[in-house]
Structure formats: C-alpha cells, structure tokens
Length: 383
Image 1 (cartoon, one colour):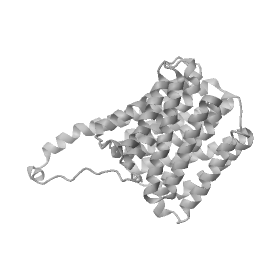
Image 2: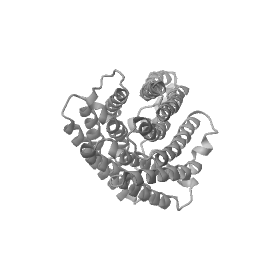
Image 3: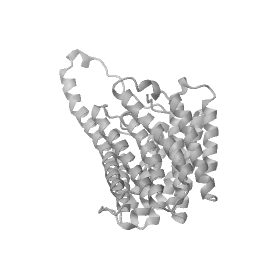
Image 4: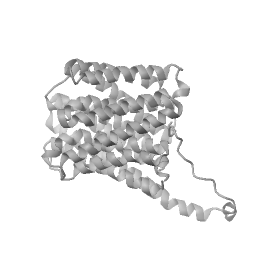
C-alpha cells in the first residue's frame, strides 16, 4: 500500500481524536462542537476511535495482508460515525467489528512465531472487543477498566519485546502472568466493582514497578535527540501508570466526577498518550513510508501534556473547577499539537528532500537506488 493511502487511513483517527477531545471539554460545560449527547462517547472515541485505529493500522502494516486493513478502516469509520449526527448504534457496531478484526490480525501474527508478547497483545485486543460489546449496554464508565486493559497490555507487550536483549529470558512469561492477572481483575469489575477496580489498581502499580526499571529507556534517557525524547516520554508514562494504580486502589469506584476523571486520565493521558508521543517519530515513518524526522519541537506537546495533566488531576482531587478547566484545555492543546508537529516535520522533510537530491553529485544517480526500508513483519524498532 502506498504512503498516500496509509495517510488517508490516519485521517479517521484524527477525526476520532478531535471528536473525543471536544466531547471531553463538553463534559466540563465548555462550549464545543460536540453536543451533550456525545459526552458518553468520550472514552470510546479516544481509546477505540483514536488509539485503537493507530494500533490496528500498525499491526495491519506489520502483517502485510490486505484484509488486515479492515481493522483500522472499521475502527476509524466507527469513530467518524460517532462524531457525526448519525444513529449511535451504527458507530458502536463498526467499533465492535473493528476490534474483532484486530483480534484476527493479532492471531495471524501470533501464528507466525507463537510469541508470548503477541499473545499478550491478542489478549489486550480481547479487552477492546469486550468493551465495544458492553459499552452500549452498561455505559462508558463501566467499561473503563476494560479499555485500560487494552491500552496497558498492548504497550507493555511492545516494550517487553523491544527490550528483550536487556531482560531475562523469563520476562515474556512473567508478562503473560501479569496479563492474565490484569484480565482477571478488569473482568471482575463487571461483577464486583469495588474489589475489581482496586485489584486492577494493584496490578497496574505492579506492572509499572516491574517494567520501568527494566526498560531500555532508563539508559537512553542519558543520550541526545530522539532517543532522549522517546525515553523521557516513556519514563514519564510509567510514572503516571504507577500513580494511576495508586489512585485506583485509593479511590475505587466512585460517582464523583473529579476523582473518577483523575484515575481515568492518569492511565489514558498520562500513560497511554505519553507512550504514543514517544513512539510517534518512529512508528509514523514506518507506517507511512514518509520521513517524519525528530525535531526539538516535539518536546512542546510532551511537556504541555504532563504539566497540564498534573494540574487537571490536582483539580480533580481537590475539587478545584478552575484547575480542572485549565488542565483540560492544556491537555487538549497538547493532544492537538502532536499531529500538527508531526505533520510540520514531515512537510519540512519533504521540501528538503528535493533540494538534497539536486545538490548531490551526478555520479550518485548513476547507481540504482536501494529499495526503501520496510517495516518488519513483527515490530517496528523503537529505542
């Protein structure tokens, strides 16, 4: 598939991001394009419509099978449908279908080499299937632990695979046990909300404590440029995952908007979005086959995200409405700044490439060029 077609597949994810951010701001009573009816779709839009589409596209490209692209297409279409004034069940069915195809893609990847980390990613996608299935019946708040299981296990499996040379051989099996415990706890929240949510918090905390010191980011954070940026984003994400675990244990199920928002955003903004920012300058070039060079400007959305999120969580826990609103606006700005920064970097690189070719000696063009670097079937390298 050409890079232009892959770019088009990212656009629905962008729509899901915009709609999700708009719905989130509407929850705080701010004037946004999202109607009050979209508020309950805020979480599914951000996790399945946005993050789910990104995960599915990367996995589809890794599988190198045309049918696998149905996963990001369906998830993206589900997010777009929810963002439009169309019957909500249409979007919910599309999201469910997309998660089912994502599971099929991951099963196909697992069949290639029967890797433990891919098995954990498959289990993570099963969480997404359950969340998409139960959301219309139970409401978005009830499936938050399932959505958390999806993003946390997906990212944890990726980090264990990429840090394999630095980990003991037992690490993948330890991850499998951790994934099984996570699944048991997130599923328990459906029957015993208090016990299940607090147990999920314990598992999240243990995953953060186990993963963070063993991640290669601990070493690369001392370097420069992109490795340092990616490492800083990942370590900050682990810190938020640990904080989320503590919050889930301390707060438990609550009907109060402030504490609920704090424990939710610590996972999905502090951990998941920080990890997305860490991987964006590396995953996007492999998926799009288009240069997206790292530039110091990438620090702006990252620092804005964590500063604004700290303010938002403090406002949630202390009941300060001005802090909540300021933090929400800051995190929304960070989320929107990331794709704009990546797009600007890609455009600058695209304009610079013809100039470099013109300046190159003519002799360089007398030899056949090497084929473009292709993404590995199993995983894109990330420092």
